[in-house]
Image (spheres, rainbow, N blue to C red):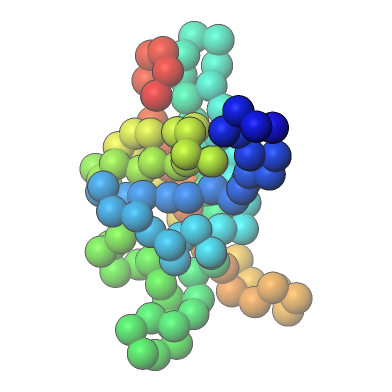
Length: 117
């Protein structure tokens, strides 16, 4: 592999919202599903933990709308390649709790586009 390519690459998704990298979203990811139909309509479902250190206290991380808010661009990259890019078209938040995982919130972001992101 002497042609400048690496044998190992990170498969961990990286997120940016409103043009700003969001390492707390990167590390808080629980589930990610991105896809595109034959017609070119894309979707992204990302589930993040929503309980932790919120500005010096323990609480909800994402409900203040400073990071995740309607109309902001939401970008998912894997290994430097963009796999989803779009402004919030639909946002759904679902709160869940169980004894094994504790409290978490699932956010769903969808945005259709024609062609590649």
